[in-house]
Length: 619
Image 1 (cartoon, rainbow, N blue to C red):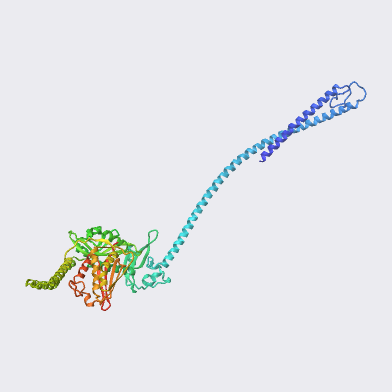
Image 2 (cartoon, one colour):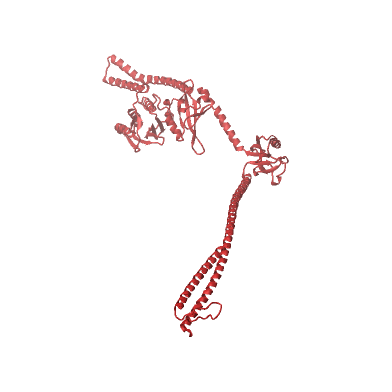
């Protein structure tokens, strides 16, 4: 910057010197014109030679004194010449000054070159400093990152230490850390229930401390693990009755060096009790006389007990993975397999009889119960099938039924003989009278009545014995009841009996054989009318029960039936009426069996009888 200032100043002085030369030239021009003027003018005197005589100008051609104008011109010339001399001297000085300035400029240029070189060196130095600064900044960033990593590791180590402290203080697992000399390094509070430990015991040998375990080789086991560097595990019991799973492992550093052992004591008392319960259940399943099968929710068999294997001949491997549906003849069951599966999926229990297959292809009858197995959240996770082989029982029942049938047939034959003998005796007597020639019209009427009685008995016997084709259809129960009441209303009026009806609205239809159900209802109402010869009241109530059965109740206020006779109602030829055959109720029971219904009698002597007819309602 200083060199540039000096150069500018030198340029200004140079310009001034040039301006001085120009001024001197102008003065000379004026002086020359003035000389020409005076020389051309009369009376002008040129100056004399320089350096001697009178330097005053002389007027040519005149001997007298010069005029004032001439004198003025002479003075002007003198001044001009003086100025010219001064200008010349000034010009000389300016030239000298210009030379000095040129030299100075050269010096400045040299200095500027040196400054430029220094500036380049400074620039290089500055670049090196900048690079060094960048390197220092990068190093600072690396140091900051390393410091942050160290701080993070310190925080992680601090958190890990806090976690370890909290774990040791809060864990329910008893733990003891021993060093190489089997001295206490650290322990958890949970172990103080069994080993008498305090904080001041850290550093003491384990052998010097007492404990409540029934296992006396605790120290020896720890020493053996430390020597062989192999884990040790054993189930031990304390004197308090608590069971522990003892686990001893080598304590290794991050470098893999064994610096001690770790003893852990896990309380497994509850688990052991659960295991014992599971063992009991397992033994019960394995030794159960019932057939036990467990399937998944899709019906795939996962387990069968030995009783199932013994009954069916299948092995566990044979049956595992098979479908429950393929092991029974569901077409002969009370419900279809799909209906049973829907029942189980709804969380309900299914009971019924099944015809299942053995390994040889033969079938056996079983009474089965299928139960959904749920977890703690109520979700069905398995199905359990419990069943019993009732093939022998069914054979025994069939034999019993045959025996009962033979017995019933004997009783029936005796009843038939008794019931038919009386009208036959009458017929035989009247026939002899007619044959002897004694004939009256009354004899014929009596004989016709006896024959009608025999026909009635034989007809009711045919209902019991002959298998009839049942044409089931859905019918309205209230309509059937009203038809029956309308049919018997005239007979009720003749016997002074009032029939009161109370039917629930919107009763569902029942699947039945209409004529047979009418026969049952007619029999119930006729029995009530005949039980009240002096008149009375019969109430008929029909309603749908919660069990999905239609209940029709016939109540009268007759004399009632003794309890000793209630149990015999429905037996062939047993009747409480004077003119009854004892087959009407038997036929009604047969009809209700065919309809999967029931008849129930309730009676109290002197207050009346109530008969409930129950019929299933099909959705």
